[in-house]
Image 1 (cartoon, rainbow, N blue to C red):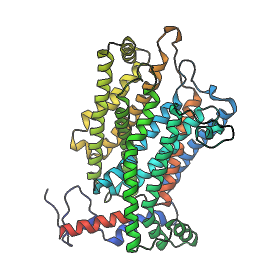
Image 2 (cartoon, one colour):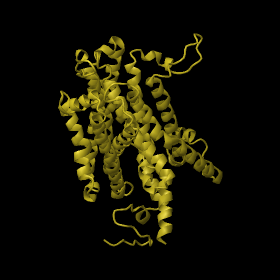
Image 3 (cartoon, rainbow, N blue to C red):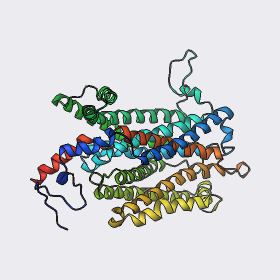
Image 4 (cartoon, rainbow, N blue to C red):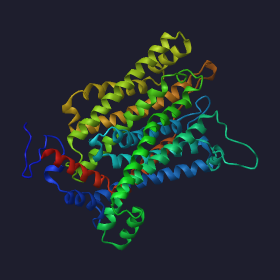
Length: 461
């Protein structure tokens, strides 16, 4: 296919964004801001919110019963003291990685394709971290004493045990959440000013006006904004590596077979980006369909995200191979048994399912550009990957604990209805927050889309 040349003389490649060809500054602003400022809400949004909020209420019920009865309502026991709580914590933290990567790292790399997806990816990060933070607190058994893990100057002179990975998680996740929140909010300021100026209702004008922090779009404002964005991006980019590296230390510092491995930090980071990009695809495709955003989230964006899934999937596959290789190459009988137990033991069906979901299916299909540009196929692959990455965390946590060094200490882990309710409830919390976000804040950056229109128009002259 040859490039099309519309009336304004801008060249548009097939499959790329048609913003430059069919949209002006005003039409870009109108289309994105109207989703937020329109009176009334679509029935589909209400249905989605009702389902998500119902699941969130299940979470509240499960937490209330947990606080009443204790962690004994979960399936954790001896020797499997870590169960769904830590599995879901690692899974949610992984999902939150793609937003920071898209926003910060790709901004530093001057990748313009990030501009259509960075805003809701950043929001996804915040909501995923909020869900993840629930589980270590609940797993403590006494979550009302969470402040004991912070280095506050108490009169007793006691301090947190800094050799505990739980304390490392507190510092890593809280830092990650703070920087992500600042980066997300700073990026929103110009768009909040746009909503302030376009809102018809007085309450909306007041709220958006307060959040816009006096933004007037002057040269000084833009200079300070760009400097703040670059500084926050420079801070956030190392966090993509550091946060899940610290999470992997929860396992690596132990002497338990299957955990005590130096490959875990890069392996966990790659897996986090893998599952995070899968969630971005899972969210982007329905948003693209229901809100008619094909001009903004194009097949080029889907293709690039498919390539990211392919690249990180290959790193994860390499991690699986090296983990198995080193278990046999090391000559350690406990590590060797741990791998054989995963492959042939009572949890073997879960292990082989995760291999199929994380390696066999995506790495077979994503090599094809036709698959990567097929909306339905890519959506289904993203769901498969997320399932596989959750099963991977389950296998890492449970299979290394349920058969330890001594056969007399072996046991099995079976999640209870309260484990499932807590996990499903966090899905409800995540989608409740996300649906509220897309209703009251612009899910796509207005000013960055307008910059893209200008840049593409200039290049086409």
